[in-house]
Image (cartoon, each protein chain N blue to C red):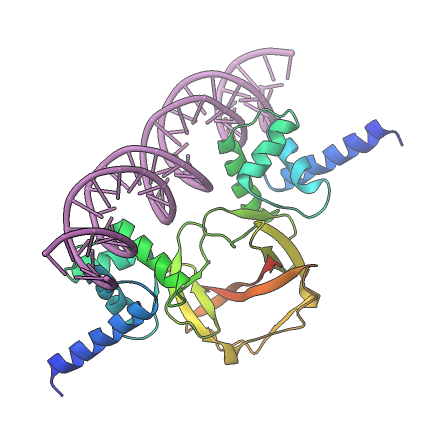
Amino acid sequence: MTVDQKESGLKANLENKIRKADLRPTKQRIALAELLFADGNRHITAEILHGEALEAGVRISLATIYNNLHQFTAAGLLREVVVDSTKSYFDTNMDPHHHFFHEDKGMLEDIHSSKLEVSNLPDLPEGTNIASIDVIVRVTSN
Amino acid sequence: MTVDQKESGLKANLENKIRKADLRPTKQRIALAELLFADGNRHITAEILHGEALEAGVRISLATIYNNLHQFTAAGLLREVVVDSTKSYFDTNMDPHHHFFHEDKGMLEDIHSSKLEVSNLPDLPEGTNIASIDVIVRVTSN
DNA sequence: TCAATATTTTAGAAGAATTCTAAAATATAA
DNA sequence: TTATATTTTAGAATTCTTCTAAAATATTGA
């Protein structure tokens, strides 16, 4: 298999992913999917992703970055992790898991669910359901 | 004990709290301390606190609200709870505990630490210390 | 008490992140 | 194709928060 075939295979796969989410595989969308999903789990902000896209030579506006991050999130391809009241982080890992948050670097790191257990959860407030349980272990460098 | 004595006792207590934080007990600070600490645990945003202060007849600017929320936080009288990437919540309960977050109402509710346990925490990333562990149980109404 | 000093408050401007708008560009279906 | 639906975009608008520097208030020590 040539490099070209491998690449077109990857791209075709991403197009598929986008189609399955009921979205059209536009140039911008494919480029973002590549940046987000091509090599493994990522935690990324809109600004950073925008920077990476421009660096990769993809002309894309910040509004489009936001649009797509939200559309991908709605489609279950991304989840938002709330760790900082000033900006939003998006996580490409959809398996149940938790996070270390490096407060000085503003950086997230996964904690696989099997590695951490939450037990003894009290009764839920009357008339509510769990949407998610988020554990953030905030760490600082020493 | 008269109502007046009780009230002045409460106010004196709050002044004390403010002084211990190395802050001057100004009219605005005392009013905020009253709103925050007078009756039990509260979870509040800057906007809401500002509204309550104005309603209570205290002339105070939003900048002062922010200044004081941060000063109280730095002094260990408040803690910030990060649950929403669009605004900041401050919690008057300084005991170790976790939260339910009612996503539809934007409302926080305490989970006492004894009611919930986090176990099996993996090794921390090289060269880091735990700053805090935050568990947010996000719930929605059904 | 009264001045000198230090802290605090404030209005309004500025900043940062995000969302909105409506027109142009692109993708899809027939 | 051509019509229709979706997407992208620049730039304005919005929301929350911080900054600025001047006026007000609190504290200290004679």
